[in-house]
Image (tube, rainbow over all chains, first blue to last red):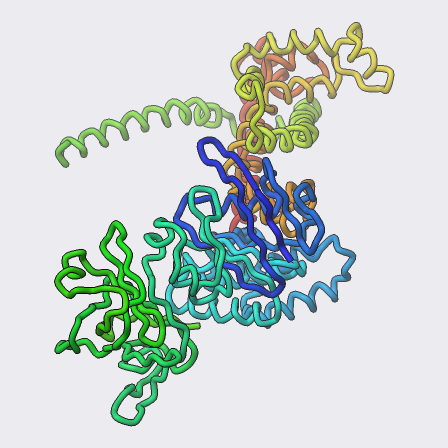
Length: 363
Length: 264
């Protein structure tokens, strides 16, 4: 669908170079990177707001590197929404529909459809200055979708939203993606990346340094930067079970209230605390929160897994022990602990972590 | 600075401000205070006076409208584009503010007189600058257009560039983006610049008197009456002209304010 080959752009001291990746139709591609790594420059180069110095961009097999901005077929939603402040919400949404040979009735009908889809029907007569962050973001999304882009580019779409609006927006974005809308979403927030992305690219210093599934990026970061930036080595997709289960596991409670629950990921069952309702989710555990012991631990940790060490590697923050406990689980220990516990590849050990150390993200 | 000293300093600043306001208001108030009852009405009925006031208002308005077509897009370029010698161009825009206006009139007549190529070409299509309304408009525009260019340029510069980028991304042409996004978003500054240019044009004397003594605009009429008959005869016309200028000025400001409110 969208192919980027060796894209480069120099802006003063900053240089984006050799950016290469491909996004398939219907994919939700997240570009994750710290501030100043060139994510916005990349988006603006893709949309034609900035001319690329080198490289090529293809959309549906057609090269669009030098195509006029108006004809690229890429819809962009800005981080700050960039709603036209002197127009009503309705006029903002309709803006891109004028000059396309559509009659007034057709434009009105299209605006109504989009308003319904983006849940902004009641806002059409309002001025942008009176909208909340979440409302403004949904209006910006409707406006970008109005022209029927082949691919939607989102620049930090959730960063200015509060928790409630963020969750609603995430649901809306997933709904769009389920309808086969191809999305490229740039963010600095790994939670967003995990929760939404079907594939991810990592940006560092103006380059895309790794492209893979979120699971593989978090499990096998290709550079120290990725490892440090994401900070997460344990990543499990599965299901949250919140309703009271046999044996007292899982406490019932209303969604939004933090309770103890069960998180199942294949053969591994975790005790977690979460405010999310039952359903699909992703559990992430920082490797420094996983404790390794040679004997079954006598501690308050609710989660204990027995497994075999399959890898030991030294890194700057410590020594990483990877054990196979049905799924791979990484723990960060000191070199002293490795020696004291006699940790070696093939040894049987116990990995434990508190329920509160497991972060559950909604999917 | 202690609170007591801050208070004293503020009092001094306010006293300075009071003196400054008095300096502006006292001469204007003096004009109205020294009027005899019925002077204003009698003066307004004079054909020469009313014709001169209408000519002044219309010529300045015409100059503002005509030059706005050139100045507003140019101001956008100055706000948005980087190019070589941009500072020089900005300096050229400000030149009319710093040169004496009678000198500006003399420079203009050199270019626009019937003996010059431009003046001769204009005469052939029926436009007369020297001693004509077109000349008055040119002189008014020459000295007042920097106010519009500067205000509009600052207004455009304050519009987030992302609004324009978003409109382009939605498929709008650069002209449509300019007309539907940039201009409305910078409307406060543009309106302010238009009012300033119009007001400054109306008050122009030095450049106009060189290029066109007749037909007589009000500042020239005031000068003539003052020179020929003295203060007593010049005062009623002066009062009437000031009153009309203030009326239009406030009306435009109120109108601009209402539009702002309506547009949120």
